[in-house]
Length: 143
Image 1: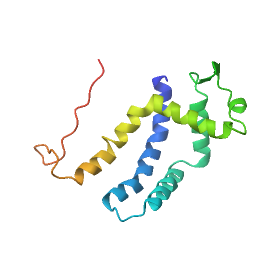
Image 2: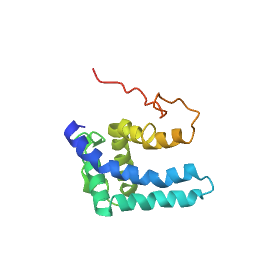
Image 3: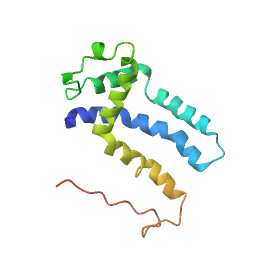
Image 4: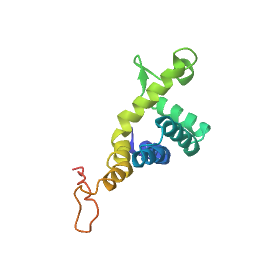
């Protein structure tokens, strides 16, 4: 996906990811919270972070990208995702496009980002820097 288009999508999904992990972070701090409550809280936060119209637009954008093909043909949203199997299929395609184009971005937000820092702050015996804070992972750079 071209960088300009990816940037537009990244700015749409970043708040959604950040809001959706808040209930999960609460669970990590307090294991007595019911997992069902955590999941429903994450789904509720997702809905608040991205209203249904914006979510529908994002899914259509992801599924209609120039590089998305089904059986060698460019996706036609109305033809490929109407009724029957198409209803769930559009979500599978959207998830695949997110994974193919944004896996590193999303994992940086989760694993080594906010969620990772939360986990590290709960384990103070982990490596710390001279300031007493957690050591930042070394980020590779593109050549």
